[in-house]
Image 1 (tube, rainbow, N blue to C red):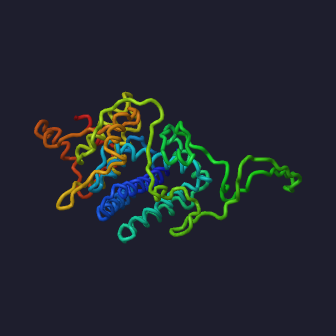
Image 2 (image 1 turned 120 degrees about the vertical axis):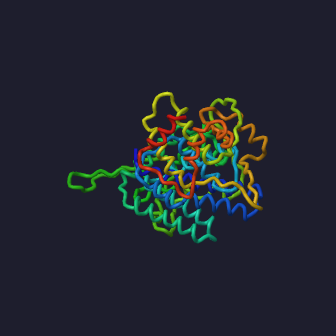
Image 3 (image 1 turned 120 degrees about the horizontal axis):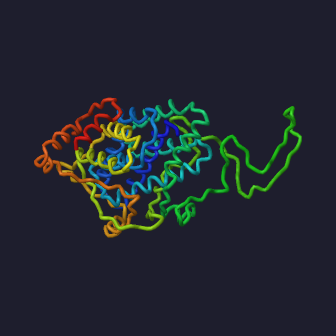
Length: 396
């Protein structure tokens, strides 16, 4: 497993999230100023300098639930709200899109080009905000510094780590099904045509060499595909032609996108995601306590990761004359409610809603703990590998 995978996973999933939200904001006719504010708020949170510093530190990938919690927090970094079913669908679309892109990368190194495509598109959302453009460009340069000179073997490990992360996800997506790149069982179809990886030749020829390195024999064979040579290598510079189209916005043409879960469904109660900072932290604690009866050796690291990564995020509550709004990723509210009821339990990410005021009246100890978790401008976290958080959990 590569310890350099997390930044690529986070940035690419974040790019897909912005694509989807942009499409749904336009589909629901949200006023342009509100839509821009939503995207700007999410992007400013996503590319926060301190957040990026923690993200780029070498570290192993964490559980799907831990990362999902981060994206839940990120999606609510503005005046927009998503309920449980819409958040589930958003995350499903994000993960399946990136899984498809990683599977189809011609070379392991092209995962970096996929990331650059996402960053290029994100910059298109914030053309009128020089400060945000500067933050994205800073992240771009960090990627070049860290990944620019990595050997091919390390990129192979990164790609393998990503594929392992997505291995058990087989959610059917309407766009993929209509384009015939996904089967009805949720598995992707790998093409047998198109350009071969840059630096390689079109298959169909076997050459034999002697001990002196001289070619002595050629044998042609039928490869059964329709391959062509790559026209040129994609640019790994700040500006340039990426050539590779994986990671570009597939929602730029407005068309409905539906998801279906492969396998049997189980009824679940719908849960609304509208949480403040203290209840989010308690949710994180209970999430890992309930994840497994057996002790998780990564529990300390995951809690420490979430504490450091999410410290700079703030769920913004609508205030003043500009009210918030709810975004629906389904065509109708009825479809959204039905999706919440039919989602399989293994793919459900439950949220514990806690009313801070009531808890302060009932339990002084809990009120003290929640006060410690209040998010200020920028909390300072100790490097004790999660010991402080685990100690607080023991007191609950």
